[in-house]
Length: 260
Ligand SMILES: Nc1ncnc2c1ncn2[C@@H]1O[C@H](COP(=O)(O)OP(=O)(O)OP(=O)(O)O)[C@@H](O)[C@H]1O
Ligand SMILES: [Mg+2]
Image (cartoon, rainbow, N blue to C red; front, top):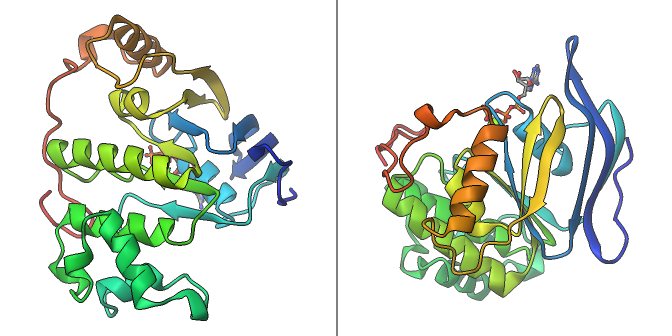
């Protein structure tokens, strides 16, 4: 596999990507193109290879075949914030910056964007799950990535915090204009935020289509409802298993054991 910068108007170009674990090809000839500034939401059953794809695009893992062209400036946010416990919040935000750029002013500006400048001198352990994830977002965006990779960044949060985080990501996206690849299990989240939605199944994208629902997106809009139904069908979810659209998701416990 080769990894180098894609052509000018393109943020990501993946051709024939393969990743095999044991005898199983998890990614099997995957094709994906993402324009600069475009927002793609990627859905797929558990174990379908979404994280595997993100790890390859983030250069955290290699591929067994094919080609992935990604910008040099790219960052990943995972489901868990992965803050460094021995560094204060501000230092966590600026940790990836070159020495000269890692100033307090830069860190404070990034924290202000996620509404947490007052927590600059706090320790990560004192933050709530949602706050910690906002710090992780600030840490990712302070590097002005051309590609932002988000691997279920809201999955461990309660329903209300998740909606607020979705709004925040939408807002930050308008400010910074990175290309975004958001992995999520939440079909409504995908349709709410993305320019395009795709479903990963059997190692490839089986659905890859633009979201034409008018913004701001209303889950009750017939176009929203129709797309939700199509995506759920692609995911193999039958109508009887489908949660009502406005049902709040149950509270979950994050990997750190914090009740969200
Ligand atoms: N390092 C590894 N070694 C062996 N198998 C792996 C490795 N990483 C992932 N796999 C396997 O590859 C498959 C895809 O894993 P991946 O984590 O990409 O799925 P996913 O779509 O992100 O799932 P989820 O929605 O549960 O996060 C799984 O069957 C997983 O067990
Ligand atoms: Mg995953």
